[in-house]
Amino acid sequence: MHHSRRALLGSGLAALGALPFLSRGLMKEALAKEGAGPAQRLIVFFTPNEPVHADHWKPAGIQDGDALTSLRPMMESLEPHMQDILMIGEMEMHTRGAEPHGAGHTGIGHMLTGRLVEPYGPGAAEFWASGASVDQHIAQALGVDALTLGVRSGGANGNSRISYTGASQPVHPQTRPDQAFDNLFSDFTLPPSELAELRARRLSVLDRVAGDLQGLSSRLPSEGAQKLDVHLTLVRELEQKFESDTTLECDPGDGPPALDYDSNANVPIATTHQIDVMVQALACGITDVASLQIGNSGAGSLTPLWAEAGIDYNIDCHTIAHDWANGPEQLERRLALESFHFRQFAYLLQSLADYPEGTGSMLDNTLVLWTKNLGFGHNSRRMLHMLCGGACGGLDTGRYIEREGQGHNKLLTSVCNLMGVEQESFGDPQFGQGALDLA
Image (cartoon, rainbow, N blue to C red):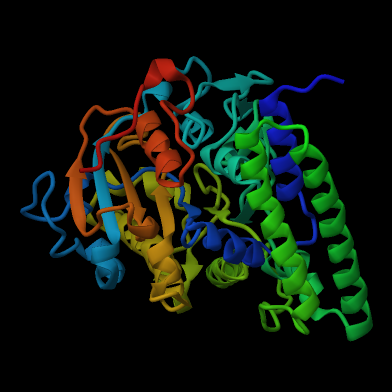
């Protein structure tokens, strides 16, 4: 068989990236010896419906490029993290303006893909996105499996999915934190005999990969062989690490208890437990990409009877989102609902900040995208986004920027670039070329 240089080198790197039993934490430790530094992580945090009018989220007395010195009352839970936030106002979802199918909520299919949807029926929710979402795209480029979590994310249709591996290939989120924990951390609770067997299998996999890399190296030009030899060295170092380790490097604890996480009454605790599972999975190096979806596009199945979480209204969240302009009582409910979601987001940021890593915290090495699927008034304009975390020094936070009229495809391109997955555009290029100016 005849192989191109690119195919040979790609197959060798794929072999290294496809080790099914390796801890990503060990891989990061080895890659750091190449000078790569701490690996970046991506988290997508989705809350339903549209942002409230900008009068309730745009910081008072502030202009494009100004430092964040205070936040609106609705967002006061985020004030401890003002310096970790880049708030981006007034963008547009150009894809939604060109979408012939469905109503405003179809934007959930555009939100992370930057593409029009593919209908599979006439109903407004009978569609799937027509391409990969940015979280899955980055995960594929990094060679990891994205962790996709949800809280009462609704039925299996386009209004209920934010993550896609490709056109009409939705990723169904795990909605039970206890089951997600078991799926992620089952290795860490093995008895000694089974752990020894698992370690032996891992070493066997490494040995086979090392043999594959050695075989490829002899068939490559000198430049390619040198690059492959670096990865072969990493594999050998990982073998030594496994041989010397007597315990796994991460203690995930006992995990969340078994509850009725599908119950509306348990939405607040389900959310915090999903955040706990997600942060622990990222900290243990199981993945570098994760998303959390609260409800579906309109959240009609969520009723905020959550007095212990600071909100108690016997009206579903979708109705609350639509009724805000009908009087002061309706506006109060709307602001209280968004404030509840911001408290959940603040819990995520604080959980990352509390986890030490290197000379800082996980938050310093993570990129967090806060997003919604609609613009103000259920249209494609006046959108609010936030990028949070240090992204390993790649993100200048603690500021508000305004990008009126700029398409959200550019923001998705910026997310890719901040994660080291260089793109000239993301999604359908007719709706936005180049990255968003974040300066």
